[in-house]
Length: 162
Image 1 (cartoon, rainbow, N blue to C red):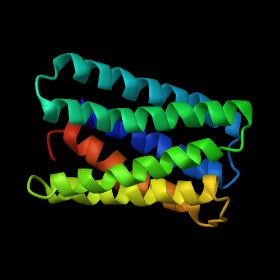
Image 2 (cartoon, one colour; image 1 turned 45 degrees about the vertical axis):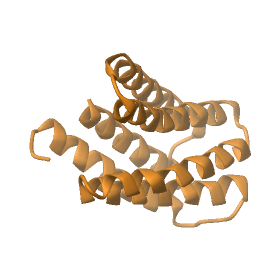
Image 3 (cartoon, rainbow, N blue to C red; image 1 turned 135 degrees about the vertical axis):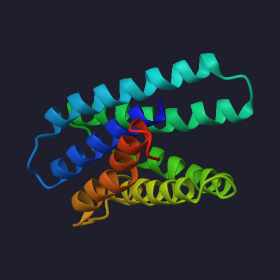
C-alpha cells in the first residue's frame, strides 16, 4: 500500500508545485489535496487495523503525518486562509522526519534519504507559511521532490522493482 500512497503523494506534490508557480488556482488544487489526503487517511486506517506492534503503529503515524498535511492544506486552499497554522504543523512534521530517518538507517538508506528530503520540504513550508518567508523556488523544489522521492519510488514499488 505504500507504493499507492507514494505514487499519489508524488502527483499531489507536482500539482502543488505547479500551483505555487501561479499556474493553478488554490481552490482547484484543494480538490486534489483533499482526494490524496483522504487516500492517505484511508491507507493509514487500514494499516491501523492490521497493526500488531509498535513498528506498525509508527508506520500508521507516519502515514497520518502526510494525510493531515494534505487535508489541512485542502481546507487552507479552499477557504483562502493564510496557512500560518499549517506552517506550524509543517514544523512539527519536519521535526518528526528526523527520528524517522534515523530509524530507517539500519534498514534502508533510500528510506532515510526520503525522510530527510521530505523533512526539508516540510521545513521550507514552515518558513513560507508560518514565518512568511519568500522562497521563490518553492514550486519547482516541491515538484522535484514529489517526482524523485514519491512518484518514482511509488511507481517502482508497485512494479516490484524497488
